[in-house]
Length: 260
Image (cartoon, helix red, strand yellow):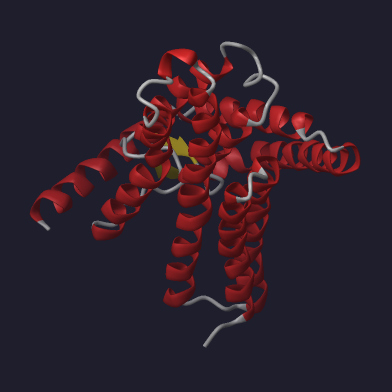
């Protein structure tokens, strides 16, 4: 039943699972790196499917389930672990003793909660806007928060508080109907190719430096920079002609959602 592309997809889900295991074992940096390695497998399974001409509904459903593990469940554990540690360090939150982990649970629950609802919502009533994702894609929100928690910015005294604000911005954006440019947008593809080469180059350099020196700060800093740039540019650079088409698609989808 499983085809070659499905084994590649499963590697994405296994990266998410191993990320959770490493969080439990206290290896937060390597747990975070595995989220990004999972993305590499997620990108490869599509290429393998095209090369081998292996497209089926099962593969799409498997991909969605593995994405849920890597882009929602694993980031939830990572956010919880970082903020349980941070809240426990604040003297003002020491009484009652359960308060730090409860607050960390509130933040940690956001990726999996909004990610699961987004998946169910758009699966129940399929929404297609050619060349665009509707709502901030789960990988983007996961990349931004995970890279920020491991970046040099988080080490700043105000960093943890900025991270809290990011959680309350990023994950609700998963549920919005704001369009974000996808890699399928034809007019964007040329620029995106160059951008992806740049991102891949800096990311690989950062990963190599991290494994050599033990400091993955440059990798996470650069990824946070690129993904934050996407967050702002991917909706503000939408051509006026496309806004009209996307609004039509959204209106039709709302009608199906209300009557379905």
